[in-house]
Length: 179
Image 1: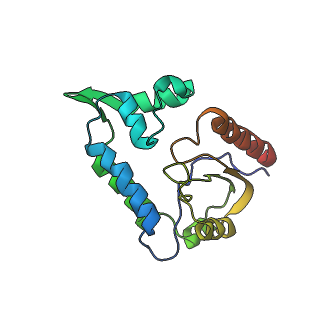
Image 2 (image 1 turned 180 degrees about the horizontal axis):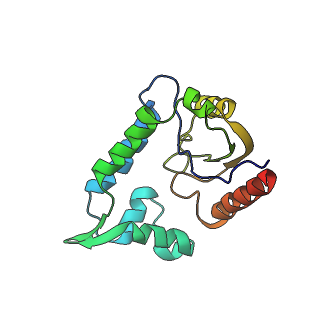
Image 3 (image 1 turned 120 degrees about the vertical axis):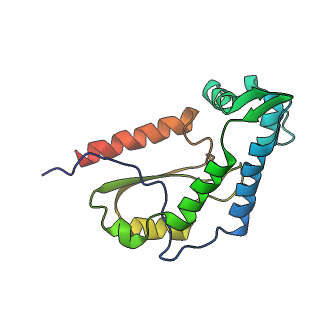
């Protein structure tokens, strides 16, 4: 009998006991949160927040990535502000660190899993949001059939351009393996 089709995504896991994110992740979270309280004069100023000193314009980015950054912004008095709610972003992060499934819960998942991770965290050059220890615990608890690490991708870029194609190919390959 074939395993059931994937029904959901597991977006994070945690050790047996909740733990605070490490200093680098906390700094990345605070930086990401800070943008939600800011007004940017132009979309390019928003890009400079993410890519300091690179003087990027939307035209410098692949279309889908530029579209993502524009989607993230809305016009306001004085410029542009991100649409996301700081409270929702903080709640989401807390759920990953404190409410994510433990390895005991993951042991009961009962279906094959593909694990796709960005090699970088929130920003280019930062360490991954899923530390190796968490990855290893997760992999041991699940029926891990396929894994894909996306070198050069971060939390925000892993679904765009070539990374998006790699994610789609990994999902296709995974589905072929379990069919």
